[in-house]
Image (cartoon, rainbow, N blue to C red; front, side):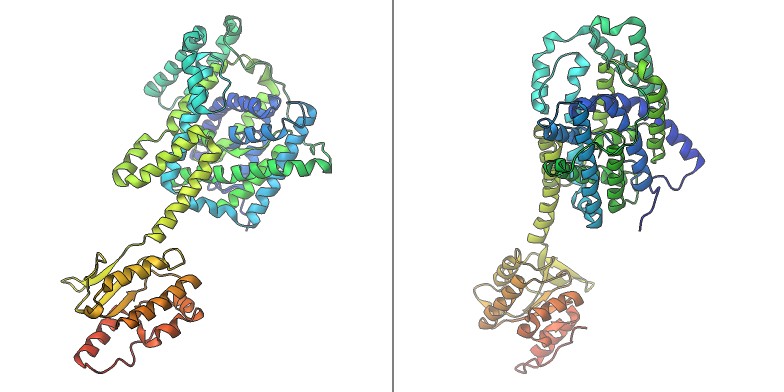
Amino acid sequence: MLTLFQGIRPLKRVGAIRDAIAGVAFAAMNIPQALGYTRIAGMPVVTGLYSLLLPLIAFAVFGSSRFLVVAADSATAAILHSGLSGMAPSASTRYVALAGLVALLTAAFLLVGRLLKLGFVADFLSQTVLVGFLTGVGFQVGIAVLGQMLGVQVTSRRAILQLVEVCRSLARVHLPTLAVTAAVLAFVFALRSLLPKAPGPMLAVILSTAASAIWNFAGHGVAIIGPVAGGLPHLVMPDVRWSDIPPLLSVAGSCAVMILTQSAATSRVYAARHHQRLDENQDLIGLSAANAAAAFSGSFVVNGSPTQTAMVESVGSNSQVAQVTTAMVVALVLLFLTKPLQYLPQCVLGTLVFLVAIRLIKLRSLRDILRESPAEFALAVTTTLVVITAGVEQGIVLAMVLSLLRIVHHSYHPRTGVMIPDESTIWKLIPPTPGAVTEPGLVLYRFGAALFYANASRFSDEILGLIGPSPTAVRWLIVDAEAITNLDYSAARVVEELKKNLADAGVELGFARLPWNTKSDFDRHHVTEAIGDSWIFRRLHDATDAFEKLESASPIVLTKASPTS
């Protein structure tokens, strides 16, 4: 069911005013950054402003995340330029039309993703790797703007190479640019300390732009944004041919995968941080609508940006009202303020982005993970290093793979043990070492995961290890199957073979607390028939009572135990 305005409702007057103010501040921070993304995408400068207009409104209407900012982003901009660079000159009319087609195809892919309910991919991004992912993004973005902040030329695309270039160029730092950067940093930090609620970034943009125009920063070698075309975008279909679609499908597909994974990763982080209920499938509709809006308004593919989402959170936003307000501010800028915007120093843009990047670096969270789980800390750090060295897209793929591998690892190495009653008759686990028994002659063995092809041999080997080379000490081995939520074909064959091996050694194999759905798997794979209905117990105590009854009545053979229902 399609629900609109999830990222805004419920709307209260106080919250709406706060978010509107945050939207104005966010616009001041993000407009220059959006202009910068056009250089990465090879698009005209004004299309960066277009990406902050209708796409923001479209996601606010159709999406569910209260924080996610869907606009121009460096990762998808780089994919776009890589795919179109050989098809038309950058920033040409033909190039813009092809970029619009890519955005439209991307919207279609994302809509198909919604129909297939692919929003679940966010569930496979663990909090551990998300911390590493955002930390890597913070380092990458911070390094990327160092050249702007210092007034040195950086041509590399990789963060490590950019850092090397900056270090080699320290002797050629442009002092006037450095002075502006230092002044902006001092101004923002001072306001943050003295007036925490003041919109420091917005004031920094206004004052630096005014100073640049008055004192001719460009004449002193300080790089400025330059001329920006004005006016609202015209809503038109990209001027393309049907034959343009096939070569762009791979570009749009790559953008769609990047958008789906990066947006899911980013929205999941902020939903968890602010205890927000997130509907990932609804967000796919919002992302599709945003890209369709970008296509029809002359912009280019848009994405859920971790950097810009951190920006909007940093200025106090708590709903998509801030993004809608930003779109309104952008409309006013397009109509009336593009001329003064040209004086904005690029180093101010870099400085504000650098401040956001610092907020993305989660050293405290990494420290907490290290304290509680060194293995998960290693996963987080690995994700961080891949984002820094290889890129955001590779970092996201790795984050998903590592999260999935953690699930596989837990299933492959489940918690197992021999169950014994303590003084209060509550079951507890002891390590499944040879000789460990629940009581003389009986072993209650717990296996803490679904039984499938990958861990079935471990299941069998551990049970045989419990019996040991002299199996006469164990006569019954009952598996506590409460955590075995399913059984596949391969595991069923292993259980049947285990039954035969134990029977040859004089040990009876049974199961207790078998879930009803797993009992269906046992029936379907003929394991119930191989084990015997009488060896499947409803409760652990049913198994122990049957064993004790048999022991006291020896040599009477067990005929019937409590059936499972």
